[in-house]
Length: 307
Image (cartoon, rainbow, N blue to C red):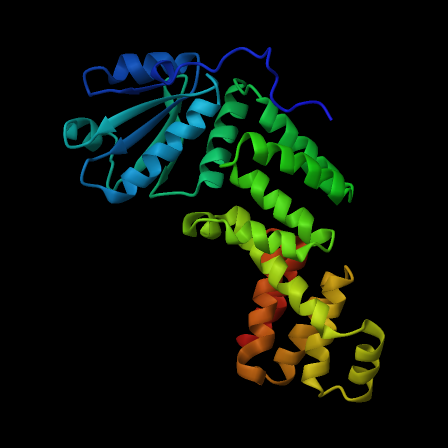
């Protein structure tokens, strides 16, 4: 495998060229004019704002790694109150993206690094300024390998990315996912144990943690065949159906697993301290919130809970 980081690649643009403090007087020059050629992210903050102190460094990190595809301007609203009023900044941190002199996207409040990366990627793609780094290209390669079911190969790529960029949450989540898919749950747990609290809460890892929990429970659930026989013999054996759902999920039958858990809820909503519903929510999280199976499953669940 070729090295991810090319020693002959051009050096990254200096942070000073990409990130700067600005003001109301310089806003037209620093934002409106510059954004005619390259997108500009404007971070509205204040020294007393704790979430701003969390968001600012993450923004700067992602902007710096974009290597000139986007620039960033920081505006202290205490020193530039008129500008904040003109742009109707009601709470901070507030982040606006400008391109060709106009605001094209925005968000408020602290965000995890993965969401910030998505925000920047969307902006650079829209502007056509995206410049893929070797790490970005490696992540795309790993994702393609996952889509084709080559989890061992994808794990090797993610592992190499983590060696070069140990703070890359996408690579760490991908590596943990590959460990789970190849049966190395111990490796996945070891990686998760190294995460900070913020990383654990990142959307990139919440589904991975749910997947690991499901995989560990599925390993103890029992064999699929006997469980199916037990449920057919006694449709009210909720314990057997619960274990059947876990075994089905482990066997790649996610839709059948969802249906099995929903059937438990239909028969007895509160069985075993709401175990079926709680496990179903973990399954939705592991599959992904936008997956058709999750959306269809949530509709079925709602029809039972609110009938």
